[in-house]
Amino acid sequence: MVSIENKITYLSRIGNSPKLAAFNQLLTGKAIVQPISNDLSETDEIYFGIISAIQANDKSAFEKHYSKKCKSNPSKESPAPFVNDDFLIFSIILGITKFNIDKAWIKNIVSIRSKNAITTTLDNLLTENFYSTSNLPEIVLMFLQHINQSLITNDFLNITFKRINENTALFDSRCDFQILCAIHAYNSIIMLKEAPEGSEIQLLKSFDSRFSKRMKVLSWIMQLLILAGIIYGLLKLPKYSPETVDLIDDYGFAFTILGALGFTFFGNQLGFIRRKTHELTMRLFGYPKGLIKNNKENK
Image (tube, rainbow, N blue to C red; front, side, top):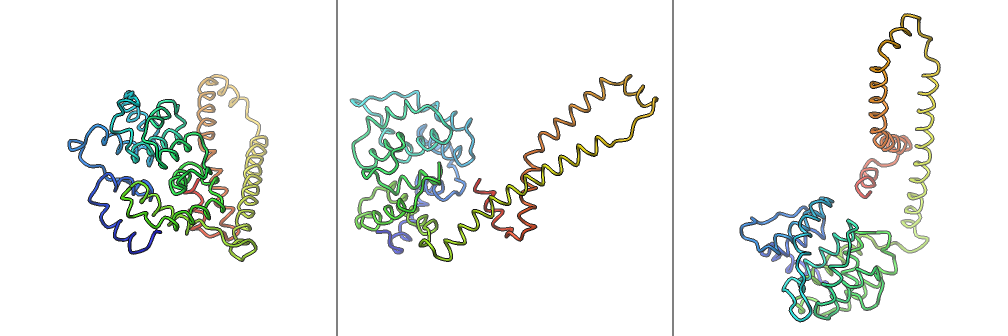
């Protein structure tokens, strides 16, 4: 069970270990502070680099660090120490899934790990068997929060909450990886847990979802009207004088380039225009500015 006293005591000493602190920051979404590389082993340097790349959503940086480690090919008869490093292996699986990288190497690594509940859970993460009763659900929840929150169901939260509460020996296990996952899973459950069906909070959530979808449709209509207005305006431009037509004929190539640049610039701004139109529509109908910001950050 994650008692407040045990949690505070445990978290207060995490800062003494850069490795634990980095994993804790990965789970909380805070940027990690990387130790001086001269003091790190190659494996630890890769570990910190992978976490930093995941947080920055930088696929190239992740592949740079991952490529160094995947050159290693340990076997079941002579496994390397990193094979049973829960923090590193989880982070690699998270990055591989996030950036859609081939899983063959990491599947082999997991297959030669010591057999325990954590290894079973990591193996099931790779096969997307998220709801297996053999999993440690606190680990799965932390994984899904980074990969696909839509897979976090209310039933899954209930199961995870129950399993964490039933684990009275959690802090006695001295398994830092599982302890950190359990602490942050517990906190996440409190934040994510749905209110009972039919309650005022649940009805407001349902309304918010429908309202956002309808505002998106309305913003599309506004964009189409703006585009139609621009096209109509272009069609209504005054006819050019013969002198102007001759000038356009003489410098047609230059006008073509300018037109192409104009269309390119406009095309590059479509995403910005779409977002701003949607935001303006929401604001016009009184949607809270803070919630608009939260929605943008969660996308």
